[in-house]
Image 1 (tube, chains in turn green, blue):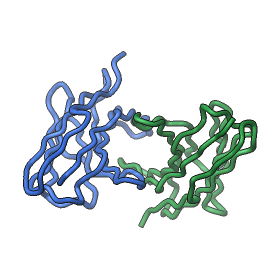
Image 2 (cartoon, chains in turn cyan, purple; image 1 turned 180 degrees about the vertical axis):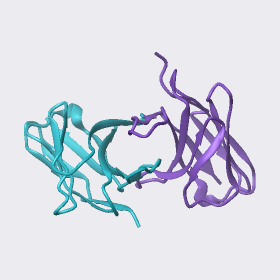
Image 3 (cartoon, chains in turn orange, red; image 1 turned 90 degrees about the vertical axis):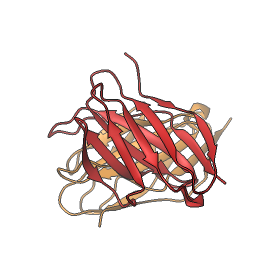
Image 4 (cartoon, helix red, strand yellow; image 1 turned 90 degrees about the horizontal axis):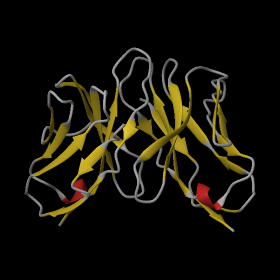
Length: 112
Length: 114
């Protein structure tokens, strides 16, 4: 079946540190891949996406590259801010599918 | 443009009772998806409605049912509540179509079953 595995958190970083949150997936065919962010008390927001192999999604300084050979979609940011503190979810949507399959989420805490 | 809204924000129910959660989709969106997010977990797909018909269902029992109305708003109904139904219920609206259309999530309804 389709599944997403994320690194466990919480991840605690100092402001301006480099961020990596690992995400790997299992899926048949060519899924689309996503990162969503959930701030306290809010719903999920789409952070970035990639729809085919070697695509790089980017937004607000965050980046992730769709690596089919390693079935990975790791999230990176060069310099985190306190305002980036949130829960980050990696997700996939299989080809022609209509639902998102989410990982368990990774809590990020950034301290000043 | 009005975003996705959900009501109520929180509610507490007793095991065995029934509950109805409501979702108003974003203007212009014709598809609504419902997800259950247990504490410390990622959201799990319950089902999706497109033009008032169920358009895909996840691994949830029949006591989870839904409706979509002509204005594309939606309800999630859960009968015979169990303790494990305690979760954040998220609604997401989108446009249907072959290419992926971003799902816009509401803030969720926090359901506690005692």
